[in-house]
Length: 606
Image (cartoon, rainbow, N blue to C red):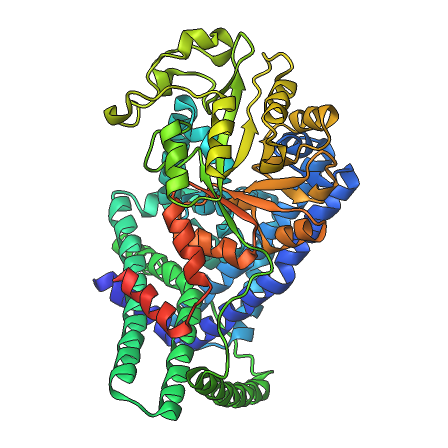
């Protein structure tokens, strides 16, 4: 608790300097530097001759020498920009520790002089520390520009699906964590004591010796405190809303209170977001100074010279903010008043109707890719059933996601090693629950017959193994023999499979399943539509696909927040394990009310 109070005190002294600086930094990041980075990345693609990136060509693109060179330059620039943020925060906190108040321009002036040390060859390790360790650990002490770097979901799926990769991943994370703990104070040695980074690392390890676990606990408590404080502030706003609805009947007064509460909530979110990074570095600063004193080492501090060049500009800026706040309040009251009176319609209308696909059937409640799961999808009101098909040794098209039958059937053989007779009587449901021991692996033809009887469409994903014979042609023949071409799409993560389908029958509608989707993907001529992993979906991607008069499916969407995001993006079809959640969320979104949604969100937290 002592360290937490000290961290808060350090923040408090120059809190408005930190708020103003971090606000400007985040605005610059969002509107200038992030677009510049993306523009640079697009230039790399143009130079190397790539118009789009998918899982099929991503690694080929990344390992081109020219790509590696340009990416290194971009990442270096990104890291330098991020390091300027960290350096400035440490400098402002050091001023607070000295009980000095400084303005933003003074902090920037000092930070620039320190930041130039990054260009020394002796500090080559510093960017790697910032870029690699902090974002991957994702413990909240990095700046926004690189903390958004995460391991893509499709890569995590590969890692989690392979035991060796999974173990290796956790070993790497543990190593990163240990290094982070050991090097935690190195940035302060670099900024405050002008040490080169190799020496800063050495001193950081010595400073935290025998105190590492305690220091990490302090950082964790600081973050828990910040999260709790934010929810407390928002919770108070909710109580005011309840009081307003329960005891106040005057519409104008309700409008004023609603506007003020919304404004306070939005302002609180912005302030807490802005202060999250400084608060964590404040905790590290407190620990740094405390450890220095315990070891009898002299604390070196920044010497500040007052810079009053823009003092009058600050005063004018404050007046502008005051005027804008007053205008925003008046406009908010007018808007809220019209909402209460029913003059504004807040219902959301969609140009396209979003549909729901049951991922491998209703796989949250039944064994995947079985007739029970498909019946469950019908019962729960799904619009589509997504299923996977493969070819056995004797050319039969079966419904199965796994190439190896160990998980589902308990048979450690691959699909190309067995005939249909070898597996047709094996239990395909007990892996989920003994209640479904009667289930068997279905044939594609049986599922198509079922779909026609129940008036539901099919998303048929081809999963080639390289051991097939006329695989795509066999699937298309089954579809056409059952007059089902107008009620299904054929999809695959292997683009060459879609090409084979189109070359065999151009009337079959194809969908390219993509873990990575970047660039002008609509140039892919054999893909009528696209199915993209949710992590990689953006508004610009949806717009590009829709502008090409194509549709976008999104997989695999199982949380309310992601479903809501996809609704906002106006995607065409979401593939989910939880059909009920998806249908309910889509329905609720069509009649949204701002205050009710706000209250329900807070209620869900508490």
